[in-house]
Image 1 (cartoon, rainbow, N blue to C red):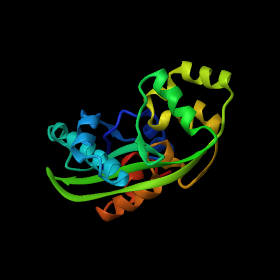
Image 2: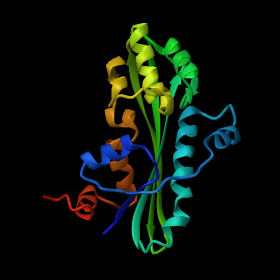
Image 3: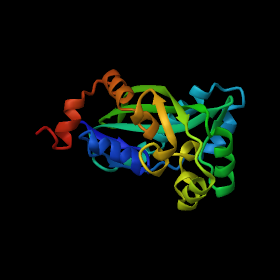
Length: 214
């Protein structure tokens, strides 16, 4: 049976997969995202940027998996960024940057792009490689100053793409979305299902591996 490896430290992605019946092996990549974005160049299409980041993360964890005795597995890497006014917005990292981001996006719409990469490995060799990005339009509310400051003080928006979440505290400030909600959370189940199919892995097989066929 095929094992599922998630190349991400994101608790939100892990929660999405667990809710969908998959208990992944979690391995965190050490990709220097800023360096890769710089190497791709300012002219790189946004969809290409998030997809290449996802591919780099998936590939980065492969060497460490070689010694774990897995004979058949898929590695899934993801990367999300918010496209606002033609510029990609990653994790703000500080309250000041997150506050500035919210000043720009409050009451407006932006596109959350999530790159997905799936690698199929059998007996130490990569036999399948599928990748693509998803796009979901997010319509933001205009939070009151006191609410925004309280949200910033929680620290949640500092380490998430676009300075917001859909599935946690930030959900209060999202009026609606047009697209796949799981992709906004960080891993799009419809797209991952499609990519898994391209490398020869079915969802039922993953449920069986996780003991969730009941």
